Length: 178
Image (cartoon, rainbow, N blue to C red):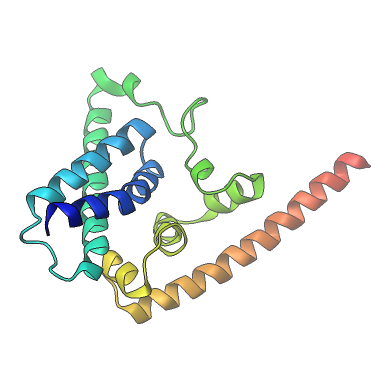
């Protein structure tokens, strides 16, 4: 991979990697993840995939590892009482809400909160990135068939949650007007 290829990949993927990281970390930490990810890509540019179509999944794999390492670092700091104030509890007032990065509506946030971490990662890969099925499956470490099956099931689960949440919202609104 040459400088021009690297530059093109950075322009094309930096925003997506930032979004991926910002779902799990603060915006400042997400910026660091983008920088660290592309630093690793540059260092490994000669050993990375030769096929240009395989590079985005490879780069997202690196980003995923960078996020995982940062989350481990944060957890280690949490166990050291000297640093607890540095990272507020996710439910504390003023903490960044992960759901805000995914949905702007109250229903969307409630649906997001009902999803498991694995389902949230699948939402991120399947709907928030511009990856093909093969690349997304490769990034998740599963077969393309397993990926498409999981996406189909996730769509059904989100539709069911949306229906349930919409009914609750309608019921709450009706109760307030009575």
